Length: 269
Image 1 (cartoon, one colour):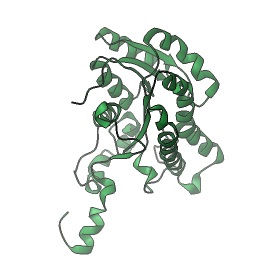
Image 2 (spheres, rainbow, N blue to C red):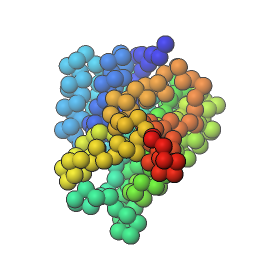
Image 3 (cartoon, rainbow, N blue to C red):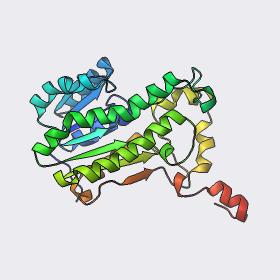
């Protein structure tokens, strides 16, 4: 049975689409939620809704790119809900052009590169450092990092992609070095997920999701709930022998290029 119950879960980027799905799923299963986000109004509104539904939840407002502020920001929530058992590094994002177009290397600036790496890679490191000693002291813990299929193949967004590739490597290092303390660390690699981040692109091209489907063997786009379910599995004892792994959550995108294969073989995929 896959059960995560009566644990303290720290979820970063909690106010976003995937973050909210994570908070709701883990909270509904009787866990205590520490919801961290840089948007005070959004995360406080989220926690109020969680508490109204009977879920123990505390909001934390912090910029994860600034390591010095995280431990102090977390302290009141940890005093209220207990030491962090499970960390889900969900916060992330990419810098694009005003029209929603992603930046290519040809348009990349050092400032954008640094910004995307700071958020998607350094931020995860900062959050782990804030809770790692607590996990060791209590005999173990679980870290789930939300990466991207962009770490495996080139789909544009080079700074974001490089940071996510670094995140996967960092996760393997965590698994290798801290397994001796009963700390497990794994990465989820989502493909396209229907979140607010895609709203601008969908406004510019209402058919964007329809056009993407041909690349996905399952002919569907993942949802925030799909990501939450995968994280729930990796956080549970059902995955107690899994660490250092990368779980592609991409409706088959990285399994193979069906469009190209169909052209080569003249078969229907």
